[in-house]
Length: 119
Image (cartoon, rainbow, N blue to C red; front, side):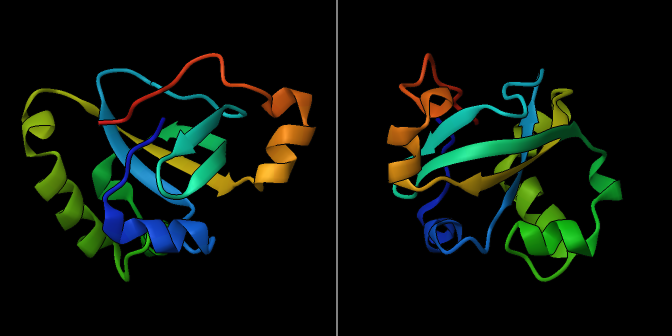
């Protein structure tokens, strides 16, 4: 499971937000994984890359629902202040939503074998 603040759910459902940056001690998701976002539905994880926050671009920001990389970094600092000082690493996760019918019809997307809760 991947958790988001309510203010991002409409953009995820609309396919406008296709990326998130998470701070984790170690990678918690992998490409090809299916996950669930409460309030938005199932997603397919496309990529999971470690990234330096200073290297985030405006393109990253737009995929994440922000106008600029600076605004994205400010949000990350607000959300992850403690993790930033505790040595967590930043991971850029790209994803796309999966239609509920696709989940039921695709054996590779069948019932989840576990969950990945992002902090």
